[in-house]
Amino acid sequence: MIIVGENINIMSATLGSAMREYRAEPVRAISVALDRAGVDYLELNIGPAKKAGAELMPWLINIVQGVTSRPISLDTTNPEAIEAGLKLVKGRALINSVSLQPERLERILPLVTRYDTKMIGLLWGIEGMPRDTSERCLLAVDLAYKANELGIKSEDIWMDPIATPVSGDISQVVAVGEFLQMLPEICPGCKSIVGLSNVSNGTPTHLRPYLNRTYLVMLERYGLYAAIADALDNELLAIARGDRPSIVNLIHLAMDSEYIDLDALSDEEAKYVKTVRVLNGTALYSHAWLEA
Image (cartoon, rainbow, N blue to C red; front, side, top):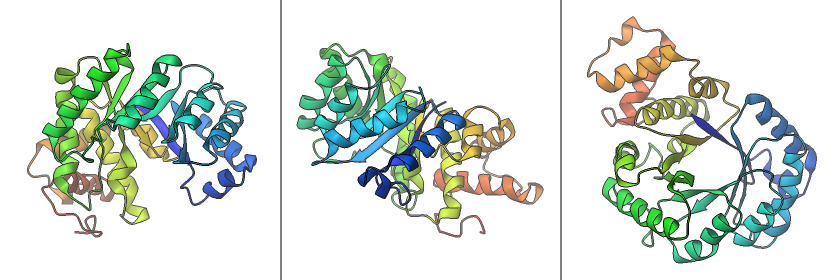
């Protein structure tokens, strides 16, 4: 499983002010931590950055590349900021993201070809968020076709079906897994990626890791290639690296079985089983689902 570290983010409560104030040391410190954690990509998320993006992105890249040689993902809706960053990136970058909104297609897709990058295809259409699995499939085929027309290889397109909070519409959470199973047939060669932490948005902080880790295992079983995730969650990284086979096997069992005797499990094991039931829609979400 490819892990794209989401931690260098201007929306971060701890790092955002440092990025806005161009304070290098906090950025340098977290880049070193992510490198030591073994993350596959470092994502540099500067948000819309309409005014200062073309200055902020290169500044970030110089700091990050000064302490790690790991690949970089550039996340912003500002095309000028993306191009300014691509001029400095060493190796092949990943652009996050290209949606089917006309301005994104017209301004970002040419950068993919010009700088020979990989791209995340965000399945957000002209009408916004896809409503179900079928709409995700239609958007994916359309996006792959448009990218292929410009000479972008399918293997360099990572489709993001858009994970949504479990506290919202559970059918959207389930639809991501359904889409992943269909992707190889509808878009041969394309890979898949999700913003994993989206599924736990709005839930209490101490509960988020169980949702993120469990959803990762469930989606990997459906064919997920990569996840944008909290790379400082050591347990999540261990699961992604295949170092927690007992947890993975238990989650798979919970996905397949209508009944598992929770009393026969440890407290930690029971939490993962309960989380599967919430994520597949067989149990209603509440902030107390682990205690139910």
